[in-house]
Length: 166
Image 1 (cartoon, rainbow, N blue to C red):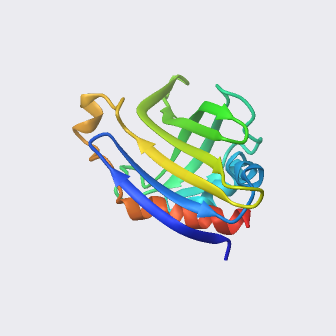
Image 2 (image 1 turned 30 degrees about the vertical axis):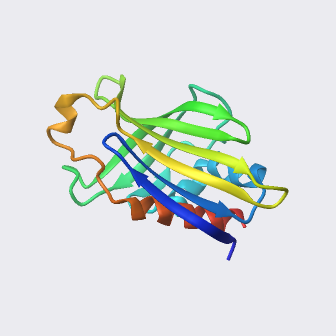
């Protein structure tokens, strides 16, 4: 397996994060994260299904959509629209998650997924995954509890990332 220790998690009022050292170079880890076709295999919640958009993530502002499934979602199956929020190859990649409304307009809910990569040498990378919901407006918080999953889901995602990058 391509994982080494340490691993840690942190939770506060507006974000949850997890850190894991991955036995792979930062460029390889970043390449896996920048490929939307790998996201369903990285996901630690089991909600992400298939990518709608398969192009490699290369710039801030780029959009990519994913098919999702969640038992508590009103439709069960649904689609999210993600917008690359930060991209600094091979150190940081993150995106805002939202949805496309019936009129075609994109609406983002105020939560961000972000991966920070710190090379620890030529073959190890410390990866921190952060789920930040600090910008979620009150009307959304009325019907979605944040975070909608425990910290273990982030650790699961990092272990899946390590397996794919290794």
